[in-house]
Length: 293
Image 1: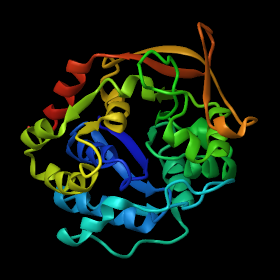
Image 2 (image 1 turned 180 degrees about the vertical axis):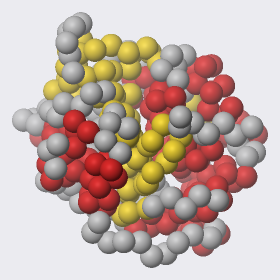
Image 3 (image 1 turned 180 degrees about the horizontal axis):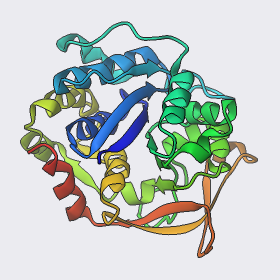
């Protein structure tokens, strides 16, 4: 049976959200129940998600969610890739103020069956968990692209964008128990990169055409894509792509410059958090592109 997925995304900032959504829409093992957007210009982000759903021929419910963090400044007020929206058909009207209730109702109506995939700041997820404190127990799993844990890669610092964009929301989510509480962090996702010329060569599916258009904005400042979010998503359908360890994650809130930093304690047998510690790069890319053939 297909896995029931709810996607919470800040599509429109880093290109990997669009790369991830295209993968979910193409994957026959995924039943995408809905999409919520988070961070600045949430409605434009919903429009971008609508572009891909339209190309895929799927009428997936889309709800703009929280635009501001629970506490603190907004780090990404703009969905930069939305500037090419005019090139694609998309919906322009979405329910307002209903994202959290949509997530809540969908999870309650599919108790024990839904994996919540979070690939943006955790504001919506934290609000959901506080509005209805039974929800975490009703989830099949929570899978997140979030955090830094093993610090083994040169150039990867201690802070990860999704975690620090709303550190108090991040702390709420990590303090909440879920049957499967999985994080795929920056130290692992940075191992799955692709240069722009290879992206142009391999993104041939019609569903990836708008992704390439969004990527034209992304490639104005870099010459590669890092598949952060698609890697987290892929572990739902092939848990051999990454190696995992159980342990405990705590979130830094006391030091201003490090708010949102994830502190990882592993080798804890009954640890409630599952963290990716390595990735089979070739297996991931084989799996990712297989859904488009």
